[in-house]
Image 1 (cartoon, rainbow, N blue to C red):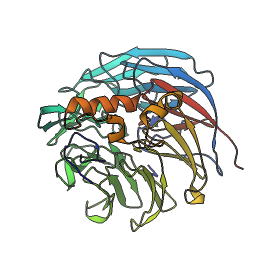
Image 2 (cartoon, helix red, strand yellow):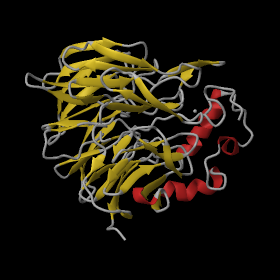
Image 3 (cartoon, rainbow, N blue to C red):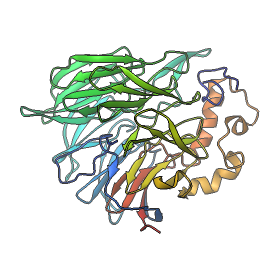
Image 4 (spheres, rainbow, N blue to C red):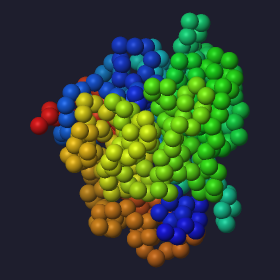
Length: 439
């Protein structure tokens, strides 16, 4: 397989017990901290209950609390929507796209925007509590033969998470300015900041009093939540086109699991940062975050178009479920079912006990409309979609990506609440899909 440019997807060269808690009885719901939701048996997708239209692509992932589901959009708004009806309760305007996913502490929701601010907003009224200015938020820029250009596969900003101990509660997140920030959760005042060697767009995950976060400098950091001091760091590969960490970690049974663009999935000792094993992703980036359940690790891949099931102790592949395109959406689990989307606008419910043999999917309306003209035999194919254009030029690669977005690409990660799964799409819609009983 030829690989000639970092700006092309990997098809050429170069594109948890831990995330979104559903524990509404607690005061904290953190992004990417518990991806296992209540449920029993196989719960396949039912009908679309409603869909809510925004005016921009949705890369942000939702959370829900007290009958309200929250989602950010590239149109610059954070939306609060009634779970039952899909009706708008309120919306909060920023001056930039919202690719960050929200977290909630008590009655306040926290998120970041490309306008360079991280916000705290009242969940009931939609009124601003405070905002904090970073050194600027922007797409990661890589240098190619045409100079510095936005990386076409840098979909997310870091999502803030809440850490609470006996003394205080803090909100923590990474920034495009290369810092990890800790702020007072009520005031938005700075507690500490930790400097890395590149932009940070992954979302931190906290286990005990340690924050784990990776960045575009290809390092994974373990940082004390109280002091901001580094405990250890782990370096992944830095080969051009295969550098950077965009996924969040999962911590389970003394192990830290995460994927990188180098391209491997790693298992580290959570105390020391020592590598226990790594899985070769076959030149495929891993932007999806891991979910671990019953000693099996589930994660999506880019160019192998797969949802992987791996042994959490050894990294041995147990099976893979093939999709039609990149799997950047981080999966969620309820009962025996795992839910995730792909870049062609398909959203899946997969029976985990069937080793990938039993599944159901729902396609976005955009996919149904455009798949015939964009996909090659119903499969994502960069060369086919390029229609002979010169993919060594950044603008031509960007045109192909814009074509793929027409399918309603799903990079938003699902959240499950009240027997409904929620996710956003690049078609600008926010979807609510009912779950059916096992059969």
